[in-house]
Image 1: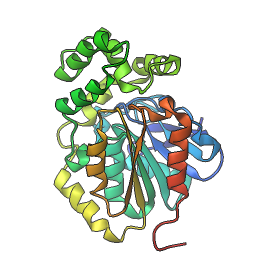
Image 2 (image 1 turned 90 degrees about the horizontal axis):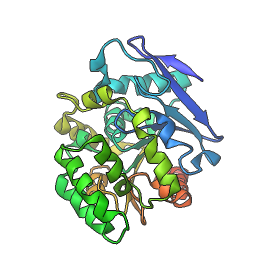
Image 3 (image 1 turned 45 degrees about the vertical axis):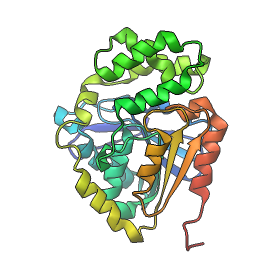
Image 4 (image 1 turned 90 degrees about the vertical axis):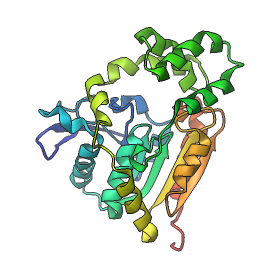
Length: 289
């Protein structure tokens, strides 16, 4: 298992899968081991996936200072990995809460990012958040599902901040477009793959300065990179229309809504997902090539 040393001395691990051009993958959770990304729906058949285990997760070391779990302080870890890999520029994929980390990295190191794929991603770094109303709007789309009535109360308690551990398990179907065997197995691994202490500090006070980050992205008018916003049709974080708003903050961006998908689109329809991401990555930037 390859690793590198972060600037504060923490040993960080990463995992390699597949062949082809490298794709640096940041896991969400927040602070869930990158194993849950798997091969991203077979994307490893087309790309060399480099999955970073964020500090304190998976095979990475635990930092001496827990304050370094804060999202903005992990930007240096992403840059250290790029340097370690010897890559001049990176194609960067971020899922869920890692969207914030990728946005902060891109704002700080725009010349190091060739493309940015934000997969059902957060954008608190830009001042965009997902409300309880958003969550319930998406939940209403699932009324025809056989598990809906049993799971709805647990889902509501999740966003009200009153959920029990059992509620999180019961509400899990809302995060998948299809609650089948693959989704159940994927959801079952969540608890053991997640660092709850780190997750509680990831978005702590001071992590985000949305005005500054928006200003930095607005200054990317001459940026040679591109962004993909991929949303799930039945996902609440973000709703497709909210993802479209996020896409509008980039000088060059593509918006894709995966039909029938929830928060983990590579589980719901691997072929659609891998085709959409690889199609985006294979495009030549506008005005070049």
